[in-house]
Image 1 (tube, rainbow, N blue to C red):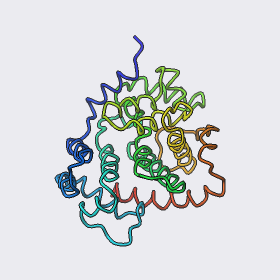
Image 2: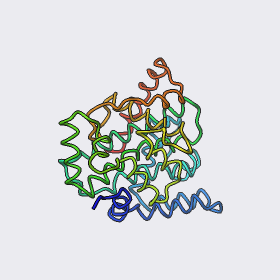
Image 3: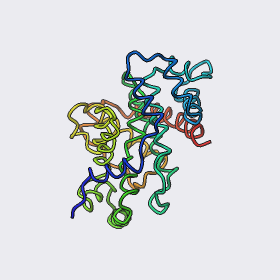
Length: 281
């Protein structure tokens, strides 16, 4: 029987569930009666999460002039919703377990994901977008469906890797040939089960084909461009051997020029190096 993308997402959501602290944090952030101190207390109950968030708040990703030394200050300076998005971005690094090393090098995978998040946030800042952490989060999560495939159907994943290398095709193209769907679709379905906001779901599910975006073409196109940029810069590796082609609609609706990309790439390289050192130290 032909497997379905939703079946993989359902199975993976059981194997890789969100940490309880994040679920409580999300509920608190969505509650208009919650205070900054209440939200900070929830985060502070998880020492590892608190440390990661403080490291990120003091990294080159933000470049604040004064050191941020506690979660309440971080929530005030960065914003509670934005801190919640950073919490999810860092929490997801720890929840996928026991994926065979012959399928993916997990640190290289997450380095690519972090790089995409940094690139998406940097590009969003270039266009003076609001709530830049949503772009960072979408970038970090964009390939999460690939981990679902690796986690739930290892035999098919090996066939996909072998066939794409043998035929010189992109992994997402070969995924569709063998599975009938690609990792972007699976990733979007997993995020839906995690009750992640719809705009983030669409950014992830449409990052290879922003033409499919119904709510936010510009946002999905930005993740598409960020993914391609960090592939070209060779920052990390999600298993893909080739740099994907840019969809025309993504380039047009973001209006970047070649001259624009030089300072963006320089900023991405700086923030990426600092953030990877911070997260994996």
